[in-house]
Image 1 (cartoon, rainbow, N blue to C red):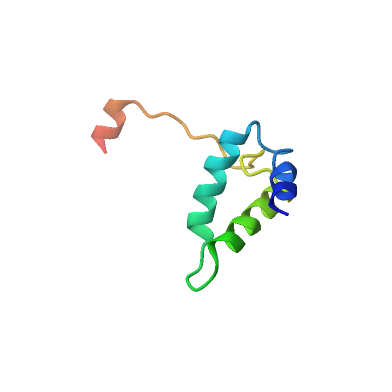
Image 2 (image 1 turned 60 degrees about the vertical axis):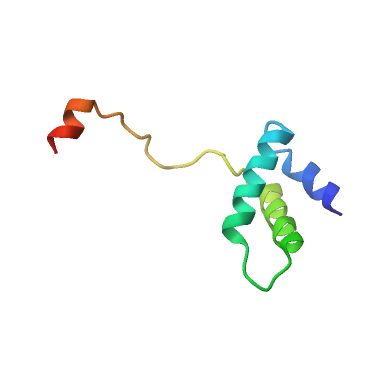
Length: 73
């Protein structure tokens, strides 16, 4: 059931509003034509249950560049 998927995904997301926003963005990106939108949404929630969608990433933090440095390039 979808409620089980939602409660499973809430273990990695702070609140339901944030989960809704992340799930809708992910569903739009992962949806394939000729498939049901409901199946794509369930797949996204299942993925959120297993991993943290906004979790600890290993990417380097983005450095802020001053306006003068950006214009000089």
